[in-house]
Image (tube, rainbow, N blue to C red; front, side, top):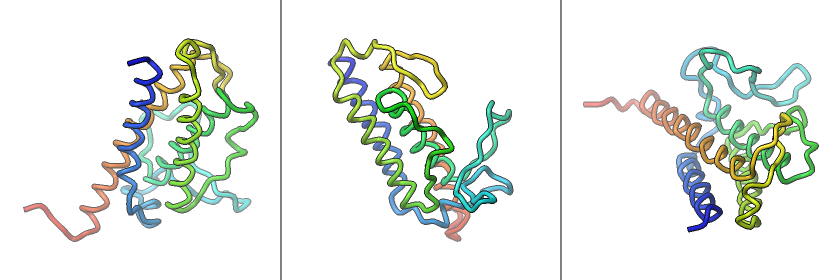
Length: 176
């Protein structure tokens, strides 16, 4: 198996696990805060939808909502595509942040389709070619995809955990 084929398989598998955990996601779950003051999706003072973020990441990291995680996954896919394979003009403030579960899933699907197309179009030798990141660093192309695979696995697991927690705290069901 070529490196391109392996990366594509991993990209598809990691994404499939995330996407499967989103089936039936409601807006109530999207905004649910397991503890007060989670990082979430919100309207700023101008009425524009955005999400909490800080550079550098706070230590310890704040608890996030499913909506925050989902927007973060989709937005990062768009930004990695934009800077590595697109026009390299899009910035975080330019992003239109969806404020529904359906809209956020569409953002995620769009970002995944762009990255998948980027990878599918690469010849094996192009995996080592330098590509831009949105913060100005150059990475080999393979690292862009590897990072997005890891990103899906990490945040997808958190989404799955939060959905399970939501179910068990809202269904009335209790373990025997």
